[in-house]
Length: 332
Image (cartoon, rainbow, N blue to C red; front, top):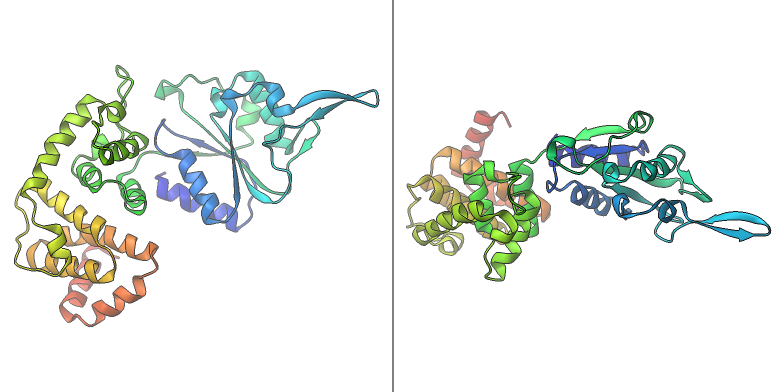
């Protein structure tokens, strides 16, 4: 499933209070742990991230301490004592078999040593697949059979939604819309390669005026820099957002991706969103207007301004007709 589909599934588990153990599978760098954290924050739940591969068995079970002639296990401080939340056991199948055995007690019985997990907590886990060349151990069949297994893969629309909400560099979003196969491009011969996680790091490097090869690799950086040069030929995006209409839509495909994403990323408030929409309706083919509206509406909706935008569109008969045409074409 895509990251957006995974987010919807996990959110529904929380809403319906389905406290079954969940195992997320997927390649490194596609955002499994980030998705779980976002779901927890949206549901206003606590989030405890435990990297099992970095722990020894006593770190999870606790230390035996003599008390009145009996050994008692003192649980670690990071395990939740009350409230409700998500206990996330990351890198589960990178942990040694003995560690997985200890984790199995916590997952199956919601208890380990002298510790019992509070009723309000969900237990979810994540791991990489063997085909991703990750250093993983085989998961014991009894443990695997206790999980719901969800496999997540990199997806451009999910990444675009996340990137626009987080304010990642718009050139990266436009570039990946033009070259979606570089969103997740593992390279077993190089330590740095392209993934959703490394493109987010690349965005921070761009903001610091640094090369992005240390994050995404030299090949991806070379293609990105070639795409960047297209920006010198773009219409003035800020002028379009301000309502100027004399500028023309680019002819070159990569420039079209760049300006369309740039409008969606930079639009600040419903007036600028509407100005860009009107300009594209006048200057571009329907598929580019649809491409823009998908991203712009996602930002408007997350900002709670959809009602205001709909009210403004209602006063523009031509835009209403155009939206109706898009709905008919897409079945929306």
